[in-house]
Length: 211
Image 1 (cartoon, rainbow, N blue to C red):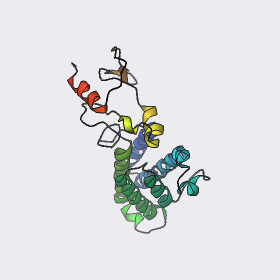
Image 2 (cartoon, helix red, strand yellow):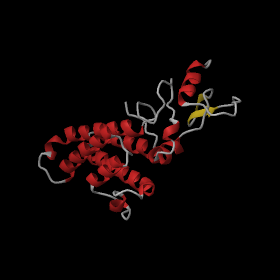
Image 3 (cartoon, rainbow, N blue to C red):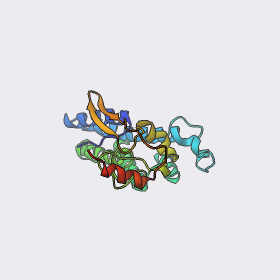
Image 4 (tube, helix red, strand yellow):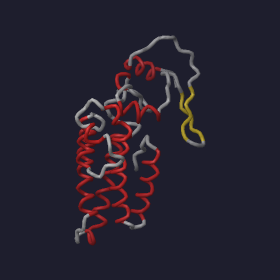
Protein backbone atom coordinates (compact mmCIF):
# COMPACT_ATOMS: atom_id res chain seq x y z
CA UNK A 1 0.00 0.00 0.00
CA UNK A 2 1.36 3.42 -0.96
CA UNK A 3 1.60 6.07 1.77
CA UNK A 4 -0.54 9.14 1.15
CA UNK A 5 1.52 12.30 1.06
CA UNK A 6 0.07 15.64 2.12
CA UNK A 7 1.72 17.08 -1.01
CA UNK A 8 -0.49 16.46 -4.03
CA UNK A 9 2.17 15.98 -6.70
CA UNK A 10 3.88 13.29 -4.62
CA UNK A 11 0.74 11.17 -4.89
CA UNK A 12 0.38 11.85 -8.62
CA UNK A 13 3.99 11.01 -9.47
CA UNK A 14 4.14 8.06 -7.06
CA UNK A 15 1.19 6.53 -8.89
CA UNK A 16 3.00 6.93 -12.22
CA UNK A 17 6.17 5.35 -10.78
CA UNK A 18 4.24 2.38 -9.41
CA UNK A 19 2.42 1.92 -12.72
CA UNK A 20 5.74 1.91 -14.58
CA UNK A 21 7.07 -0.80 -12.28
CA UNK A 22 3.91 -2.91 -12.65
CA UNK A 23 4.24 -2.99 -16.45
CA UNK A 24 7.92 -3.99 -16.08
CA UNK A 25 9.31 -0.59 -17.10
CA UNK A 26 11.86 -1.02 -14.36
CA UNK A 27 14.44 1.51 -15.50
CA UNK A 28 11.72 4.11 -16.00
CA UNK A 29 10.44 3.51 -12.47
CA UNK A 30 14.00 3.55 -11.14
CA UNK A 31 14.99 6.87 -12.69
CA UNK A 32 11.62 8.43 -11.89
CA UNK A 33 11.91 7.49 -8.21
CA UNK A 34 15.35 9.09 -8.06
CA UNK A 35 14.13 12.18 -9.92
CA UNK A 36 11.19 12.61 -7.54
CA UNK A 37 13.55 12.32 -4.58
CA UNK A 38 15.68 15.12 -6.03
CA UNK A 39 12.57 17.19 -6.74
CA UNK A 40 11.48 16.86 -3.11
CA UNK A 41 14.88 18.07 -1.89
CA UNK A 42 14.70 21.05 -4.25
CA UNK A 43 11.16 21.88 -3.17
CA UNK A 44 12.09 21.95 0.50
CA UNK A 45 15.23 24.05 0.00
CA UNK A 46 13.55 26.64 -2.23
CA UNK A 47 10.37 26.94 -0.16
CA UNK A 48 12.07 27.15 3.22
CA UNK A 49 15.48 28.78 2.77
CA UNK A 50 14.26 32.32 3.49
CA UNK A 51 13.41 31.17 7.01
CA UNK A 52 17.06 30.29 7.60
CA UNK A 53 18.91 33.39 6.40
CA UNK A 54 20.74 33.55 9.73
CA UNK A 55 22.41 30.15 9.24
CA UNK A 56 25.75 29.24 7.71
CA UNK A 57 24.03 26.80 5.35
CA UNK A 58 21.99 29.60 3.76
CA UNK A 59 25.12 30.97 2.06
CA UNK A 60 25.45 27.70 0.14
CA UNK A 61 21.88 27.59 -1.19
CA UNK A 62 20.40 31.07 -1.47
CA UNK A 63 21.40 31.78 -5.08
CA UNK A 64 20.56 28.54 -6.85
CA UNK A 65 17.20 27.65 -8.40
CA UNK A 66 17.91 23.92 -8.34
CA UNK A 67 20.28 21.54 -6.59
CA UNK A 68 21.80 18.39 -8.03
CA UNK A 69 24.28 17.95 -5.17
CA UNK A 70 22.27 15.72 -2.87
CA UNK A 71 24.79 15.86 -0.02
CA UNK A 72 24.52 19.65 0.31
CA UNK A 73 20.72 19.55 0.13
CA UNK A 74 20.34 16.68 2.61
CA UNK A 75 22.86 18.05 5.12
CA UNK A 76 21.35 21.53 4.89
CA UNK A 77 17.80 20.31 5.50
CA UNK A 78 18.87 18.07 8.36
CA UNK A 79 20.88 20.86 10.01
CA UNK A 80 17.83 23.12 9.72
CA UNK A 81 15.75 20.39 11.43
CA UNK A 82 13.49 20.33 8.38
CA UNK A 83 13.86 16.64 7.60
CA UNK A 84 14.03 14.07 10.36
CA UNK A 85 17.31 12.20 10.85
CA UNK A 86 15.94 8.81 9.68
CA UNK A 87 14.59 10.53 6.56
CA UNK A 88 18.00 12.10 5.92
CA UNK A 89 19.53 8.62 6.07
CA UNK A 90 16.94 7.31 3.61
CA UNK A 91 17.69 10.20 1.24
CA UNK A 92 21.39 9.29 1.34
CA UNK A 93 20.52 5.68 0.54
CA UNK A 94 18.39 6.86 -2.40
CA UNK A 95 21.28 9.04 -3.56
CA UNK A 96 23.53 5.96 -3.68
CA UNK A 97 20.91 4.07 -5.70
CA UNK A 98 20.64 7.06 -8.05
CA UNK A 99 24.39 7.13 -8.62
CA UNK A 100 24.43 3.43 -9.43
CA UNK A 101 21.51 3.86 -11.84
CA UNK A 102 22.35 7.12 -13.60
CA UNK A 103 26.11 6.74 -14.01
CA UNK A 104 27.09 4.01 -16.43
CA UNK A 105 27.27 0.68 -14.70
CA UNK A 106 27.04 -2.54 -16.76
CA UNK A 107 25.34 -4.33 -13.87
CA UNK A 108 22.26 -2.12 -14.27
CA UNK A 109 21.48 -3.97 -17.50
CA UNK A 110 20.84 -7.11 -15.47
CA UNK A 111 19.59 -5.90 -12.09
CA UNK A 112 17.30 -3.06 -13.16
CA UNK A 113 14.29 -4.74 -11.50
CA UNK A 114 16.04 -5.12 -8.15
CA UNK A 115 17.43 -1.57 -8.27
CA UNK A 116 14.04 -0.20 -9.24
CA UNK A 117 12.28 -1.97 -6.38
CA UNK A 118 14.93 -0.76 -3.96
CA UNK A 119 14.54 2.84 -5.14
CA UNK A 120 10.74 2.80 -5.06
CA UNK A 121 10.62 1.30 -1.56
CA UNK A 122 13.17 3.84 -0.33
CA UNK A 123 11.16 6.71 -1.82
CA UNK A 124 7.98 5.40 -0.19
CA UNK A 125 9.81 5.26 3.14
CA UNK A 126 10.95 8.89 2.73
CA UNK A 127 7.46 10.12 1.97
CA UNK A 128 5.89 8.10 4.77
CA UNK A 129 8.51 9.35 7.23
CA UNK A 130 8.32 13.05 6.35
CA UNK A 131 5.07 13.84 4.54
CA UNK A 132 2.45 11.40 5.77
CA UNK A 133 -0.74 12.74 7.28
CA UNK A 134 -0.49 10.06 9.98
CA UNK A 135 2.31 8.66 12.07
CA UNK A 136 4.69 9.32 14.93
CA UNK A 137 6.31 12.47 13.55
CA UNK A 138 7.17 14.89 16.39
CA UNK A 139 4.78 17.60 15.14
CA UNK A 140 1.69 15.41 15.64
CA UNK A 141 -0.26 15.38 18.91
CA UNK A 142 0.07 11.95 20.49
CA UNK A 143 -2.80 9.89 21.84
CA UNK A 144 -5.47 10.98 19.36
CA UNK A 145 -7.78 8.61 17.54
CA UNK A 146 -8.30 8.84 13.78
CA UNK A 147 -6.70 11.77 11.95
CA UNK A 148 -3.45 13.47 12.99
CA UNK A 149 -3.36 16.91 14.61
CA UNK A 150 -0.53 19.43 14.78
CA UNK A 151 1.04 20.39 18.10
CA UNK A 152 0.78 24.06 19.04
CA UNK A 153 4.53 24.32 19.66
CA UNK A 154 5.27 23.26 16.08
CA UNK A 155 3.01 25.71 14.25
CA UNK A 156 5.84 28.20 13.70
CA UNK A 157 8.41 25.59 12.73
CA UNK A 158 9.20 26.41 9.06
CA UNK A 159 8.50 22.95 7.64
CA UNK A 160 5.21 22.68 9.50
CA UNK A 161 4.23 26.29 8.82
CA UNK A 162 5.05 26.32 5.09
CA UNK A 163 4.43 22.72 4.05
CA UNK A 164 2.11 21.00 6.54
CA UNK A 165 -0.33 23.65 7.73
CA UNK A 166 -1.41 24.90 4.27
CA UNK A 167 -2.72 21.38 3.69
CA UNK A 168 -4.60 21.23 7.01
CA UNK A 169 -7.97 22.39 8.29
CA UNK A 170 -8.41 24.33 11.53
CA UNK A 171 -10.73 22.28 13.75
CA UNK A 172 -11.89 21.91 17.31
CA UNK A 173 -12.16 18.61 19.19
CA UNK A 174 -15.83 18.15 18.21
CA UNK A 175 -15.38 18.36 14.44
CA UNK A 176 -16.63 15.65 12.09
CA UNK A 177 -15.22 14.19 8.88
CA UNK A 178 -17.53 13.14 6.06
CA UNK A 179 -16.56 11.43 2.83
CA UNK A 180 -17.29 13.55 -0.25
CA UNK A 181 -16.86 13.09 -4.02
CA UNK A 182 -13.43 14.76 -3.95
CA UNK A 183 -12.19 13.55 -0.58
CA UNK A 184 -12.93 14.28 3.05
CA UNK A 185 -15.19 17.17 4.07
CA UNK A 186 -14.58 18.81 7.45
CA UNK A 187 -17.62 19.92 9.44
CA UNK A 188 -17.32 21.77 12.71
CA UNK A 189 -20.49 23.58 13.78
CA UNK A 190 -19.88 23.24 17.51
CA UNK A 191 -19.99 26.51 19.49
CA UNK A 192 -16.73 26.59 21.40
CA UNK A 193 -15.81 28.74 24.36
CA UNK A 194 -13.45 31.66 23.66
CA UNK A 195 -10.41 30.08 25.25
CA UNK A 196 -7.23 28.28 24.24
CA UNK A 197 -6.69 24.71 25.32
CA UNK A 198 -3.53 22.63 25.48
CA UNK A 199 -2.68 19.77 23.15
CA UNK A 200 -3.35 17.34 26.00
CA UNK A 201 -6.78 18.85 26.65
CA UNK A 202 -7.57 18.73 22.92
CA UNK A 203 -6.70 15.03 22.79
CA UNK A 204 -8.78 14.27 25.89
CA UNK A 205 -11.85 16.10 24.55
CA UNK A 206 -11.44 14.49 21.14
CA UNK A 207 -11.21 10.99 22.55
CA UNK A 208 -14.13 11.48 24.95
CA UNK A 209 -16.57 12.97 22.46
CA UNK A 210 -19.72 11.11 21.52
CA UNK A 211 -19.31 9.83 17.95
